[in-house]
Image (cartoon, rainbow, N blue to C red; front, side, top):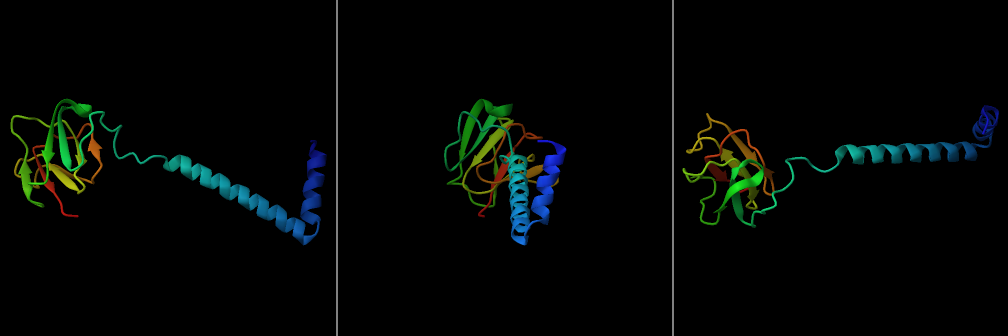
Length: 146
């Protein structure tokens, strides 16, 4: 379509009856909204709290720890049922935690200090989260009631 022809169509739509102008404006508005929604969906994507979930899944009700990064090496499951909520639970001393998964159904705070001291590093992770490579060796956890 030539520039002259497209200019004529635009003139015809914008100078025609008010109903044509309204229809043109509404159509353009709908296309703009649809494009913005598509861009937003692409930008939001999948939540990126952590990398791909471990292949060796953590069973429901457990907090799983691995001796290697990226959920590799020896795995231990820590059953939280006997754990007193909101109290520090030290992890086995002979085991250095290099990655973990929280499938407890509750938020869990992981601590660098074996006594859950807050002067060392610690982070809280919601249920369903996993950390393939935490920034510190985890030595204790605290399971929260909410």
